[in-house]
Length: 403
Image (cartoon, rainbow, N blue to C red; front, side, top):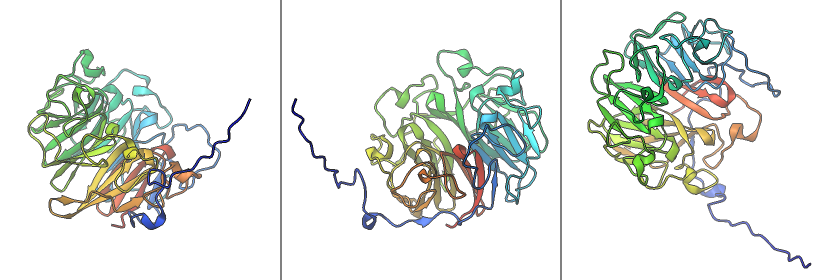
């Protein structure tokens, strides 16, 4: 048998690597050190150990909401199926939580607290936001959103309103129906409240639901749907090729000045509308992370990311002219800027979690440190602070913004 020797040449094309000279410059998104780290250590132990529920631990937190500059702070401790609350923003790492919702105490865990589903139980809580003087939580695997009229300041305060279900005692996807409706949900992962409107990423139904009218009753129907042409369909990309109207895995929502932005994680992009649509099936006006609305490959089919690519972006927030995105599978946070009213950059210009726009890797392929990230799921900006739900590192960190 004759063996032929083959010589392989690695292509110098940008599909593999960009030289440092060709890389765009980036500015730091946050200050060098976090203000505080909760749920895990600032520099975790190298040897992993089982994560048990306690007042100081988190397991895969996917969302956090600092309701004012100094608190209260609520965290979706997703893997422990609970919400953890602090009366004020902690000033020391691993400060114990003051309150818990979803479990009978700080050392218990399990879906719905291992009891019957009710107004104080949660099953994979993910998205969380302030809602006026209250709070809204995407209780994803109970296929519902819980609403408190006042932000809870005690343990196991019962929610006041539930959406997605007719009452607090049921938690079935789309209420058991074969098709969704304006009143049902399937894996809602994201919530946002803005200017009297509630928006929910109804992820399993590949759509975003909008309530333009005040929410006054359990199971209230949404007024508008994006990502589908009507309330009764749930196909990926609306059953067709990807477009500016369709979604595959919508996750988080924010308003960037007058623009509505949705992270369409399954299509590796951000959809941007000018204003908040009032008509169902309205197409987005712009797309970030892809060259156009028909392409959906992660990192635009490159192995290494760029300043204009995304890989499963889950979290999103905004501060003034900046749009801040948790580029989850690239383990980094990016920021885009509106240079002038109505005109947004197509390239991100600020970065956190990696050394430059061309790098990726959980914790930069090294042991975790304070300024590294591992699958960040949630980001929230408030004042000059950025709250990051660093899910893979089992922690939530609060940073001072540098932009």
